[in-house]
Image 1 (tube, rainbow, N blue to C red):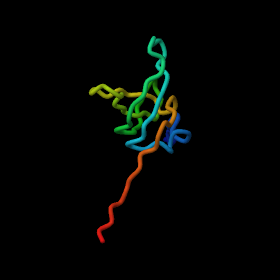
Image 2 (image 1 turned 90 degrees about the vertical axis):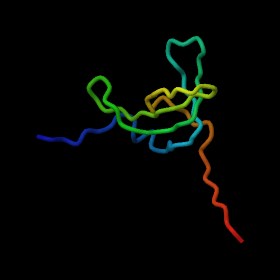
Image 3 (image 1 turned 90 degrees about the horizontal axis):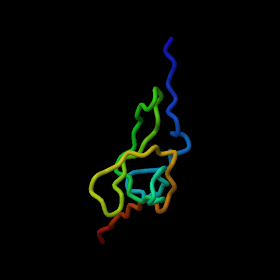
Image 4 (image 1 turned 60 degrees about the vertical axis):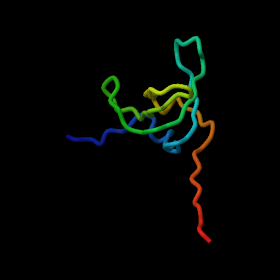
Length: 86
């Protein structure tokens, strides 16, 4: 019996996209709130279940971190501007 596996957090977090500026609280950190830009969105198995995650480059850092998308809050959506030639 092969059931389709539901991805935890995907329905709630589906409005995020690459380039969005987001923030989240890091548990156990004295810094408290973290902020960065999403560079990838994907499903990852954590603790035996699929979790929707975001790969994020934190502001002021080069190395990306992986954060469950369910913990993210939108700061600013990415905008794509189309340049028209006249």
